[in-house]
Every structure is written in structure tokens, then in C-alpha cells.
Amino acid sequence: MGDILLTTPLIRAIRRRHPDAWITFITKAAFVPLLAGNPRLNEIVGHQPTTPLSALARRVRAGGFTHHLDLHDSLRSRALAALTARRWHRYPKHRFARAVLIRFKRDIYRDRRHVVERYFDAARELDVQPDEGPLEFFVPRTGLEQARRFLADQRLDPVATFVALVPGAAHATKRWPVGHWQRLAALLTAQGVQVVVVGGEAEQAACEDIATAAGDLATSAAGRFDLAGSAALLKLARCAVAGDTGPMHLATAVGTPVVALYGPTVRAFGFFPYRARATVLERDLPCRPCSSMGGPACPLGHHRCLVDLTPETVLDQVRRLPR
Ligand code: SF4
Image 1: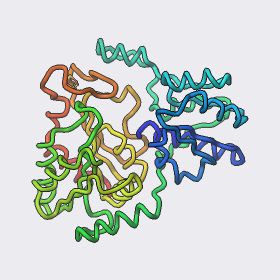
Image 2: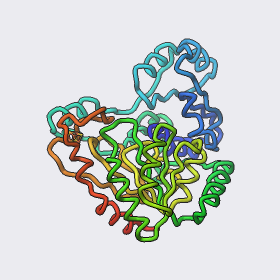
Image 3: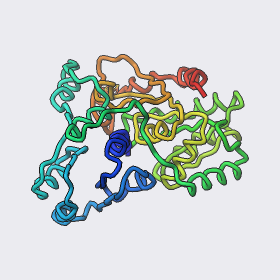
């Protein structure tokens, strides 16, 4: 999710520089809703994991595009590129610097740019520059209606009064402990702040535990919304607390201030919140970073990178965020 949202400043720049261009975005079908409302695109091609690359390559060839940008640079995107027999442009992924930083804790990155700005290297021939604007997600009206109905049902104020907690993350080492989320929710509600815990179906039990621990002013919305509804909830929140995850980027893309909790990953990778009202909390530990994506368990067993970020510290940052 995050990787797709991080391409939106480039899409915006291309549209502004080339207002009449036809722009097609190819991504997995599951991610199409992230861009479905983006007026800067002409077409989004969603493909299933089972879609043969040869069929996708035929589609690309038939499109007659003048420029081909590979903003993923994965094995699959490289295979697709090879099958299209077209010239594709890529961005610097800095795999070697990343590996050295993870393995030897030596920072040899020369390119300190955010990945959003590294993507622009793939579009050099299009004469585009970053405009210092944020990520974009266009919340559909249906999502806002869904979210407002939910808030009304829960007797929560509909605009910017509640704090959204987003505890989920695909990889365990990027997850702040559930006990910390529970304590943060309890601290917030003790001060009269309403809390909505946001997550997917897989996180439903944990989200409900967090909300239950915090009493009547907290509720869980996990598993109740599609992407549009979740984005709308985040947009309506006063601020969001999240880990280094796609939903954190989604919150920034809808303009909501964020407190972001970073554990095994670091700024040099280029994935901190981009041009957003955001505070990043992280611990300066010699074991960081230990991976670029997170993993199933802390290699050292203590998970101090996130355990040591206390709920009280996070609460303090929530209070300081601009509204
Ligand atoms: S505590 Fe250190 S080793 Fe463990 S997950 Fe965090 S960064 Fe990695």
C-alpha cells in the first residue's frame, strides 16, 4: 500500500507537466482502490497474481506508450519489462547501501532523498520535479458516508475530535506491543479523548482488545471498512498513531497529522512520512536497522526498538501535534 501511495507525487508532477498525456498505472488488482479516485490517471490496469506476465506484456505493447517507468523494480516487474521489449526507466534502490547498513550498521548512503524523490529519477526524460506537496489519496464520497455513519452510531463526534490508533503491520517486528496500545488508548480516554482503533479483518481481535481496555470512549472499527472507509476514518481523525506501515502513509495522504513509530527500519531507507505533519518516534539502538521490511521476530529477542517507546512518550507527542 505504502509503495503505491509514495508514487503519487510523481503522478501529480507528470500530469501537471504534461496535461494532455495518457497515463496508465499498472499494479496488483488489490491495490487499484488506492488510485481509483486519482483524477491524474487515465487508466489503472489491475492484475491478479495469476495473470500471466505475457498477457500483461501484450497489453503494455498494445498501449503504444512513449515512456515506461518501473517504480517497483522487483523480479516480477523486471520480467514484465523484458517481455515487453521496451526500454524501461528505473530509480536508484540502493540495495548495496541498504544491505551494508543492515548487516554492518555502516551508513554509506550518499543519496539522502526520500524514495518519493528517488522515483523522479525514473522520469528524467519527462522533465518533472518534486513540487514539495504531500502524497495523495482521493477519498470517495461513499467512504466518507460510511465513516460518518459509523461515528454517529458510536456516538462519536464526526470531525477531528478522535484519535485513530492503527496497531496493525504485516511484519511482527514493526508492531508496537498490544499492551502499549492498550495503555495509550486508556491514557487518551482518561483525558476525555475519543479513540477509534483502525485495522483490517486480520487485526480485529487485537483492535477490539485495545478498545475494550480503554472503556466507553474507545471503539474498534477493525474489519468493518473497505479501503475507502478506512481512509475516510483516518481523514476525519484529529490525528493518527501508526507504525511504519501503509496505513501510516495513507493517513498522511489524506492530510491527517501522524505520530509514526519506527522500529527495525531507519530514515536512510527513504520511507519516513513524506511532506506531512508528522512526528517520528524511534530509539537510537546499535541493532537498528535489522531489516528493510520488518520480520517475524526480533533477532535479539527483546524488540527494544519498539518496546522502549513508551505509551506516555507517544501520548506526549499526540498532544503536541498541530491540529
Ligand atoms: S530491537 Fe533491534 S534487533 Fe530487535 S527488531 Fe528492533 S532493531 Fe531489530
